[in-house]
Image (cartoon, rainbow, N blue to C red; front, top):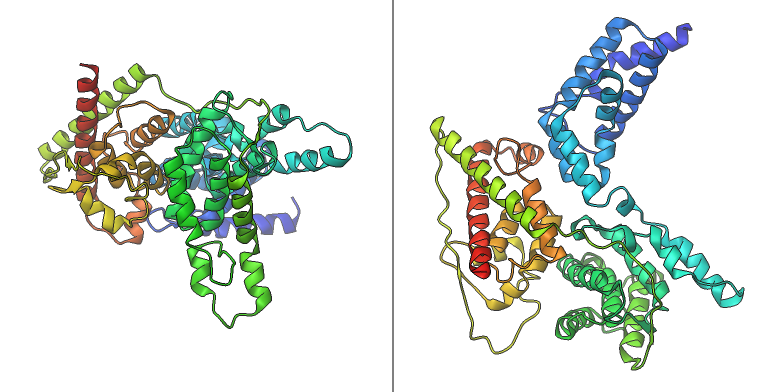
Length: 477
């Protein structure tokens, strides 16, 4: 080795604490992901080539082993399925060259695969559809939707909860091309209809909760062009979208953008911020007012994953029993276990009309008391429980998801949407039976009662599953 190369390695070695900081202080962010991954690649190269001092490599191995085996890494990878492979890259390297196997990471990667990753993480193949769609207009080429759509998120997505904003835009654009931007209809008998309806109804609620008017407008176009989307539900979201129009005629893309728009803002800045959503609103109108539309051509998509009902029941009962064992063991060790008083809530059943947005736009602080002890939730909120549970599952709010499962109607129907929600709940259980992957959040909040939080959530988990299983058994009976 040259003197320069030795100096570089010495410098890296001297900064090992910045590559892998103390785990009880580390911020598990993009910087840490990048630094640990790149250092692991270098470690592998040095190890494979036989370069680098034995002492240095051993020192790096010790730090990496602690990092790989840390609960912080396990939780971070589990909560970020789209980037789990990147977080676990050092683990893959050490598994390859040292034979280290960690069951938690293996289960995470199984869940990643079951959820459709890495295929579901693509966000740009609709650009390929873009080219073919427009070339077919003028260059006598054929727009082969069936083959082009195969590699898009619309096809590859297996779990609705894995859809983020970028993936949602990929889905809307893929749909735009097959629907001629709202000029054609996806009929009920189309083999992709069921999946598209589930995606649309799920993302209508998600974009509305986020006050993401641009995405909401695009999802409304999809809803207008898809038979099977509940008309009254679609009408409610369309009304919400139309309310966002500025008196001057433009539509802000989001509530956040609207908050910073001022009357004296330069014309070009308002245009830059709002022209796209205003175009979307015009396409909404075009699609809505066309009475007779051609059918969208046949194309195939992968179906949303839906667990076998018997398998799901076995998994839920097992998870419930593991949680009870955790609570019993915790109590036996001297920790205080105070069960949460949370019986099944009653429902209003005499509502003459349905508010399809009831609860969907509520904040966590407003919604949580409605699902709490001795509260009475409305039948309208219960009807939206699936959409609400999806929204809060996407943000990792296990407490609200559990309470929605425990108090809603219809949750015993194993649709792909509910299967994804219940799968999310099962994945929040740690190997010891407790509920919640949130070490990093607890540190940020400087929470000193992590055990109490885990106990409370685990008790809520048990009660929610008991309610769901009771309803399931009564339904079968």
